[in-house]
Length: 143
Image 1 (cartoon, rainbow, N blue to C red):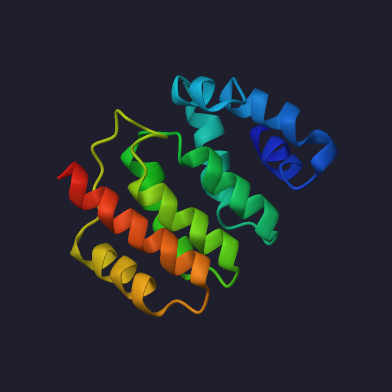
Image 2 (cartoon, one colour):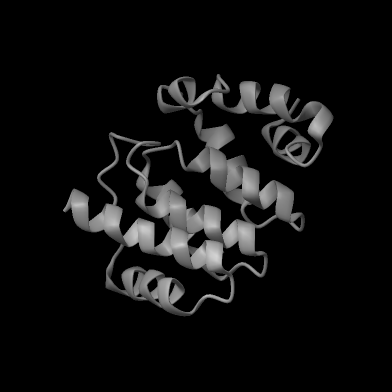
């Protein structure tokens, strides 16, 4: 099965867990932190961030959150403007969480920081505002 087919399966509850195992090599947080994602799988997950299905976008962000690669960080940034609240919330989480990727040294530039600050103050969804505030705190703490 191709990596793009596996990313497509993230949208289906029945096949999601198997797809995650094949894409990332594990399921739980510990396994995901130790995952080694092939270039082909990584690129498929990045394409998944632009998928028409918000479920696939959410899961693509969720999995990229465990990739310490700077390119994963960059792929998630556009989702700060996703029309779906839970995708925005997951994207802002992924930009600041060091628990999910303790070996990452990626930090938002000033433009992204300004966007996260705006989300913390003004996002229409309270959960997104709270997550953006937590992300800001995590970024400051890791600096």
